[in-house]
Amino acid sequence: MKKTTLLPVLVATIIMSCNNETAKQEEASAKPYRLVTLDPGHFHAALVQKSMYPDVDSTVYVYAPDGKDLQYHLDRINGYNTRAENPTHWNEQVYKGNDFFEKMIAEKKGNVVVLAGNNQKKTEYILESLKNGFNVLADKPMVINSQGFEQLKQAFETAKNNKLLLYDIMTERSEITTVLQRELSMMPDVFGELQKGTLEKPAITKESVHHFYKYVSGSVLTRPAWFMDVAQQGEGIVDVMSHLVDLVQWECFPEQTIDYTKDIQVDKAKRWPTPMKLSEFKEITKLDTVPSYLVKDIRPITNASKAERVLPIYCNAEINYTLRGVHAKTSVIWRYKAPEGGGDTHYSIMRGTKCNLVIKQGAEEKYIPTLYIEPFKKDSILQRAIEKAINDLSVKYNGVKLSNFGNGWQVVISEKLREGHEAHFARVMERFLDYLKNGNLPAWEVPNMIAKYYTTTKGLETALKTKD
Image 1 (cartoon, helix red, strand yellow):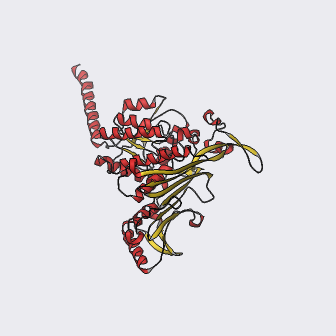
Image 2 (image 1 turned 180 degrees about the horizontal axis):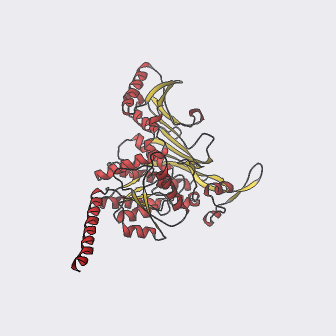
Image 3 (image 1 turned 45 degrees about the horizontal axis):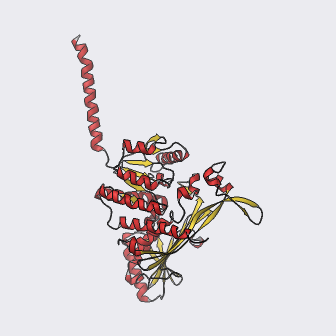
């Protein structure tokens, strides 16, 4: 009888011992970074997970209200997990409920919050996440108005005090033509010095053209209706413009600290709408009706053939400003759909004292970003300097060479260096993980993020005072 009683106890003890050992092994092999995805309303939240990372746990905790935004996000992650080539293996643990933010704070199952969605409360979520011990990787824009800018400054101070990191997703720093434009601009034998420029002829100009109807990961993107509401998404002058302002700072003053209180002067700014047909709105949102928060914005227009109603979206903007005395102009333009074979495009010019460095992405370039070197005087001395520069760069960026083009040169870039926009999200995550391991960001990053969002929010303030 005793033996019969002891046997179950012995078995239970062995099982508990095995379980404890397994738990210890799992704990010992646990990866240092665990992602928490908060209310992933924008497709950028999924693109962060298009790749796996050695130091990031495969289990991701998702907190969001139930609905289509969440389902679209999970469908994209599932698409990455089930693709034929190099599939990911993310394990999404989802909490659905209106108290999703409070639940995330209470459970604290991860240590890095990824934020990419509705921007109305984003700055508040950033601040509260930092107050509660989370590092934050946030999609742009981190702030959409001047009131939020003050809150963002507080968030950076909170991150510093709590020894946490706050970083935004600046994918365009990984675009190879921009990288090479920056590299060449730092070579005096090639570029000379950056001109100061004027209001009419800025030293640096960046223009970005985007489209509402687009493909992401091979499928037509479904836009949430709130994306067309500037109160929730933010106007174009504070949204996509943040990329362009970031690049101006990053290229003109590489790894230098910018003080927004004395280095930036917004000279002019303007904004204008893209009129979206209601049929177009329904096409990209998959909705039969326009939500009540947008109905007030619908306007009748008359074109050559008929009268129709449109939704005017203030997503287009231009800022003329000076940065440490250098004149810059950044422009954002949104159209409904790209021309056949095209997509989002980027134009940029940096004016030096020896040449201009120009990125074009039009029909002539077959909508592929292309970097040109346009000299003021094509002589043998400059040519030798440029040939040497490209030869030196080809060691660091294998697959770069020089080709004569018109009165200047084209920098020919191999396909292996052209990752594409979606792959750039992995590059940002890799940089952020390196910063987490080091325990800090480069000294110039935080003040320059603050400077960037000062420029965009001040630009919005200025544009709102300017008549259309």
